[in-house]
Image 1 (cartoon, one colour):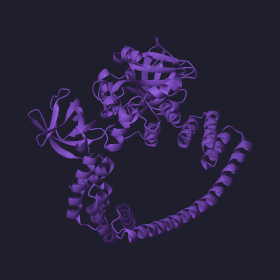
Image 2: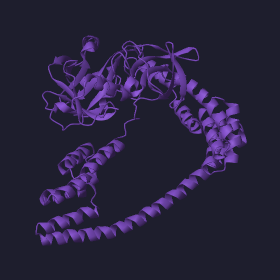
Image 3: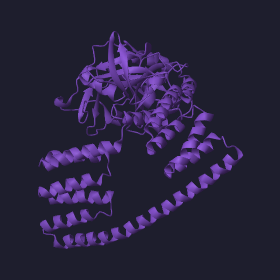
Image 4: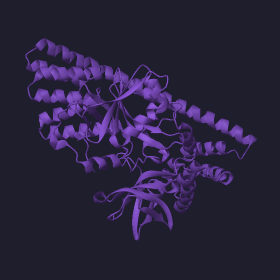
Length: 510
């Protein structure tokens, strides 16, 4: 797939910028847009959408925050309609919206400048830059690469994963541009009703083909068992991937099926967007750190330093990167600089023994014997201190275990009291079964879960736990039968989390 790290793309010809000024700008936009404007910090950006009263998508864009104004970066195909639509609602508010002439670039990530804004772009930490920037041409994405990165990274692509005049709940924007907890906005009532029921009827997903993907046209119908279940939004034939709008009960991650496209049959597996899973900053930072370590091991010291600096740009408290930079600088005999970075280690972790040890070595090489001895003493003191902290941690873990055991006993007593009154209470039976499962008393969990399903055959998580119980008892055929029934019930109801977990379990048994 496309590696976005250190890449950039120019949006100047396809997008334009509006500024929103006036004392009421944030309060006004908070009531008009789908995402939470109040959560936006100065220097950051967020994805926003504008709906009609029926919850249909009218426009979408990036909202950027400065101290004295808000900025909107929007596709030129949407800008005129957006401007006219929003201006109709400015009546008694101190708000003015006007165009601004700026060049626009996006990147993953680059060094910040005065006109750079941080956020998530295509499921990676990205930046939007306004005004002049100087990026290396060799790192510029092509138009096709940028579109593919947006599709796979769950960033909206106009006319594909984000279609104007369709319900926003059927759009990829529903993942990252809609906040139902922020309060009212135009179309919010419709969106909330759909979400609290079963979610959007159709939604963009990824279909991973088992063999080559044929040439497809946008909006080609996708059929399964003689019924239309969705349509093609785009296809990445080189990667054997299809981005498709799929009906609810087939949107189960890991589900395998033979679909029909025109007169061709194709085996596919369902996956969610973004392709690499929801962005995990910790994992991403670790991956960049590992790249830097590889450069260090190849003796590419300057390149490694630059990449370690990218890590601390993403995570200013990343102790290991500061230490690695300091060690490399020491290896290059740049001891004063190395000491500066060891001080940054101590800012991130005041208990670091190695930071004092390295400082001691660097001072020794500089001929500063007194300072070297002081750092060596600090390292000794902190190494003894760490033993005491380990003992405290062990005691805390033992106390936590006792608290968990007491909580389990309390829950069991509560559920037993409920079952004495009503032996068919679903919540109590499931709760007791869950406790028995975690205590590895599987034979006691099984009849309780079967009772829950007999009483309420739509209780999705009961199918999941019963399937896991049968697997723990090595009753494989019973597990398969329960999981298949559970997936059908859960996916039809829109309970996609238990459906996905059951499908994953079923795939492991295939």
